[in-house]
Length: 546
Image (tube, rainbow, N blue to C red; front, side):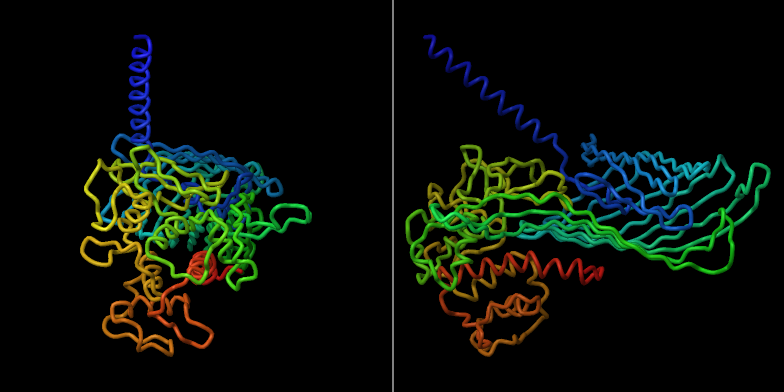
């Protein structure tokens, strides 16, 4: 009797715990926006840096910021940022508080985030002069395209600030406009922005206590910022000889934020034009975040020692992409579609559907936090098996959409039972749009994967199929004629973006079966593309940063 009563109370407690957990998740903001970037500054976990142009010259201010975010009743995301900045050499102090609101409108994989300023206050003291922000107009709109493995972003903004100097003694107007592009995926994120601005001064300047002089001046500047987060693997050898493993891979994550500026500024002396000459000034600043480190599982596989793909196999194994628990990897055997699905979930950080147990986990997931239940689209929920946010590292933009929690349903594939332990991986890649079936209602998990099929899946994961021109396209491979018609456009795109799967002789060998060793090399090459080539395209190429 007592046992039954306790069980009944336990069920009630579990019910209410689950109820409040779901209620809490549903009240979380639908997006995470880095509002501090809207003022053109950069930061790490210790300090914030911004360039002030208000006085007619570029002045680097340093200090701290405090951020908070929430969600309004209308569903929009809200954020508040407080700034405390100074430049002791110039005798400048800045206090600023900004409140933003972002409306999120979704249409399929795309969403448009429109941000407006809700409240503002800002005072800047320069010696004995006091600049007070009287009016702040701000408009920003960002388009985000959620592809299976990558979120792409492009945005535009314009703003105008009007300051009163010493209670109406003069007026300073700062106008800025610009655009930003970026991406976010499991192995990093980059957002680059270009800003143009003008500053106009009109009014009187105090030369001394009794003398006021009327003057006007203006200047223009351009500023580039880059917010970069990367995740990479590094081999760490063990020095002692009497140790059970010679070494292993360490997962590193770090952030780098860079600011560069240049402009034409007036030749001022005590706030008054000293000549008609323009002074060219430029500079830059960079802040690096504290690197996060995490050890990966070590592959104790006898048949890969000395193998040409040993390094790739060990790295991908450490990420939890291979399910082997024995002593042999069998690198020369074919790699199957089902195995590739599991590997993609681990490597690309694809969300798994919530199961009856509440979470879906990937063993050996490279130390990334697993089983986290997160809000998805339209108030639904999903789990991210490989979700990592290091301390001091904010997300690039809104969270990646995941698959919704669903009640028990009929199997998606006729050849895979829902009770199959690997079913969640097949469903994840299928619903994400990364892998399609081999026929109506068939996934074909035991079908060997060809080299060209792997390439098509990679391009589909990137969401770049549309980059190929219409009609027949030709690639640079010597065996171009062997490429199937259905795969030709994707192979063309992969070739153009620099993802080359050909051998040393210029052959793709598209219809050959991908071996397990080749699959490890392919996946690792894909990771390097995400880490390096995409960064170069969005950071070095756009802003010419070195």
